Image (cartoon, rainbow, N blue to C red; front, side):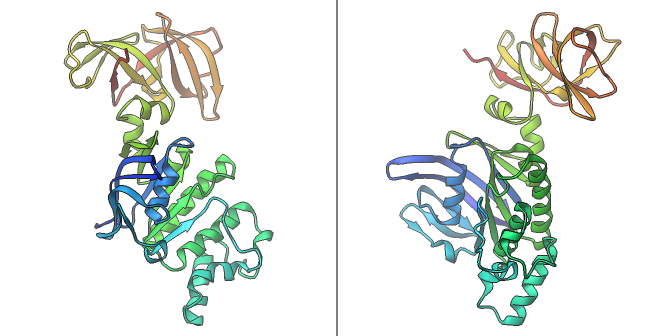
Length: 349
């Protein structure tokens, strides 16, 4: 599968103020990427540079192997074959749904235009709404129309800027899954901006975690969760705590949970102080375990409880357990580490 998008070590900014630093990522044809991070981290600025709305100060951007941005030169957005879905939908209120979808292909022959509109309305689940106007639709339906309009000209790359941010969490995740299905059906490469990691997990093949204008890690959701590149990624992705530990061997760390085997940070020898990332699913409740912990908080999540547990030496950890394991606050429970992956970081001074 060939690469469709290459972002090669670009800086982006406004005047003398740089907002994005040394950003690098690539997407293969038909893959879906996400720029994930908190507000102000530079993710929308990076997306706008890829769209051609912002010039790059350094590095370059290529689409299908052809250069579209470099310092001092930018190919205009309308010549990039790039579609864009905005946060506010940007539908034309005076046009019907069908006419909104057809807007970008209005110069196509009438029969081909009508066929494409009907194909897309069917694809986004709105075949009966062609004659309706945007104000008669729900937010989720309007977003589907905006998606269909962006897909109509068959762009080689579709960019989505926080497209579901005005919707509730459950709807955001379900729409993200729907959009993934639609993009895969159309074979269109996508790149989306969001601050919501569950939304990112629902749609992405690869995710760039951004902070302070930099990409900290460009990876799969699985690797971001289980093998974060640094503690900032570990803090941002998923839930967990960092437990103080000490390296006691080439592949062994002593922690309040006992000795744990795994890869230690490069350059960390015996006696090195480290922090070990403990996810809720790294620990199991086990009545037979000699390690006992006190339940100090619990949150019911339907299928599971999320317990906050105090270890004998005072450190606290999170543990996820099936909801039929219902333990009271103050109760002592047996705890057993169950690690598939070990994420260890040098201790901050």
